[in-house]
Length: 287
Figure 1 (spheres, helix red, strand yellow):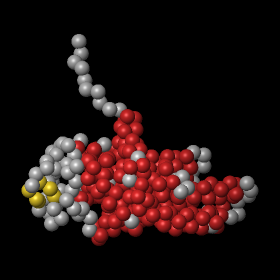
Figure 2 (cartoon, rainbow, N blue to C red):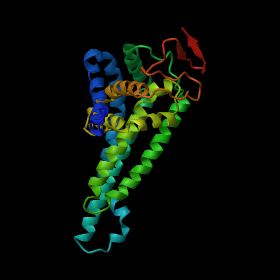
Figure 3 (cartoon, helix red, strand yellow):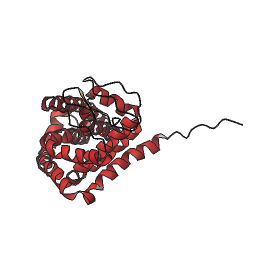
Figure 4 (spheres, rainbow, N blue to C red):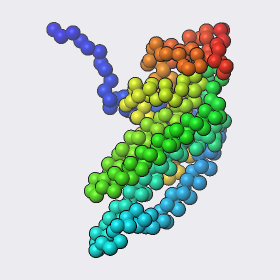
């Protein structure tokens, strides 16, 4: 007889489990509607600005497509129009991807106090929340700029993919959703990981260790953000869901190294052991 092996979760199950964290975050609209409305306000304001940007992009799409393909000016029809139509679609995809990638970073900066309250409410319900967050404004801005910079570079690569006739646009959309989901997972888990003293590099490493689960949460969030107006409802729920995802990832990784500021390493249950908690100055408080 063969020795039985533990039932290891498949990538699909992990992906769906990650998506489930967003569903749990959406339930907070029923349990804490006032708090969630506060989180919806910054998303609404930023969304209006971004919507204006999308409209401006679409109005100038033909001009941008011609600017990208000056070599096709003397081409015969229908080749010139066909190429510029492909270029226009590629520009639209890349522009929307850039806006989607940067939306969360900008909204988190605008509504930081509101989203911190949502995150802390989730932590308080689960117990043993960090005493204080350790997110300095300069660190938050620096991390956001790093993520936005990478996102813009990837969007440019996807723009080139979109210029490929045939399946280029489909490939760009699929890769855009996967990368967009990854960026959103990184951005939205910032509250929980920063409060426990983890750096962006450490956060990235922990998300990578459970990549399918992290992508499940991020990709679903990304797709819903593409629905006009949905980001206003989804954004506060995504912050709540990211708090749940973060604790789940931490709980699954025993023996974590201490963060760079010597905050205590989380235990297996996803929090400190109840006796030692991280302090803003890098010390600890014994209870």
